[in-house]
Length: 562
Image (cartoon, rainbow, N blue to C red):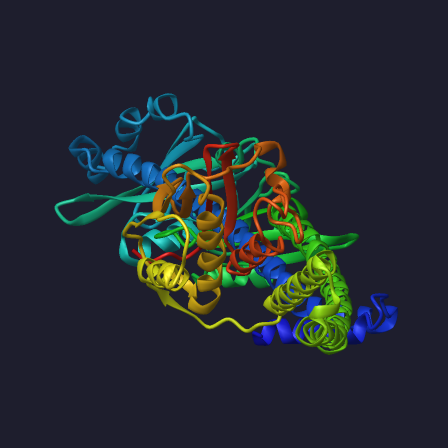
């Protein structure tokens, strides 16, 4: 018996000793069986949730990176416009000749051509404002060397995008400046400054956010807020450089975090990244509950599926153990029945044979020692008694053989069915008397089974064929095989008495006979023996016949070999 079957039987015997469950022991065992599955299911759900979270974080980081690229592209556009205007030869010539009014005339159409640019002005290399457009009073002639835009552009005389600041001219609004040096012959002769309102940057952020429910924060190189949904564009400029995430941005770092807010247990998922080349930074966020909802739903669905699987496994395990227990109980009952059958067989073998031997012995004494006292009728009656004793003895032998079939061990191997049938036929025909029977044994494929038991099958089928065909005008018996439905059917066919197919289902029962004892001798056990042997091999038997035209008995065996 395989280890798994022995283990199931051992468990079943202890959980269901009498076919009835032990609740506590059963619960403990099922818990032990299900615990590993539950642990694996829990790990799978946790892993699926973590994968979903990682996907949500990656998606938000991708959105942040894309937003940074868009902001950088808009800044590149500003700097390209300023560089193109500052490098016009006429602009350089006018600035070099200090013709600031002439230089401004070259720029007046710029705000109309580029709506993002709110205003512009011209300064000399020292930072003094010479002309501005649109013209605003109170600033012409003032020096702005203290501004970040001047410090940035004059440090190496390259294009510089400034942090946000409150402009000096009225109305005072928060702007960002793009400063571009004006050169002639390699010498800086002036500075062109383009100014953009913070509201313009807010418009970019709204375009980036779209209808996805995202929140976007844009900060400059000082950590000042250029855009945030809760911070007005005009008013005091807020500096968030002390915040950990903004501080990381100012160092050029990128990453993500889940930030819990007051009264918000789930918090917000935030991803941040620097704008390449400008020192600005972008933070994109969304509610963590919303971001992780797909991961949570997928994990919940997997948990439900695992729960159902565990429940089905638990129910199936309980049912299997119960069935194993019931089978074990049936096995015990069968073993008890077999013991009773063995006792019965012993009784038949010894207790019933003793009276038969006495009857046979005394009847023989009567015939040998007292026959002169018996008339013809007495001798005939005594012969009938002796014939009955012999028949009873044969019946006992057949019953014993039939009862032993279920307990007889099988020794399976490859069997030469042609040779086996020929050997059985030779034994049956050896020394036989009566009309000659034409017997034909055709070639048959080998089979897998117990040769000794299969010999009994052929012995019963061939002997029946010889017996029931002896009254035919030209007795004929055929032993062979044919393929039917992908399997081999081994058959024994005769042209003898045949039988009525209405009673075919009775042929393979013990003591079932369709012909009288005065027509054909026999005990009615032979076909039952053949049926039991074939069934033990996992095969099937069948019978076909017609009264007065013969019969065919066939059987199949699994695992035949060609």
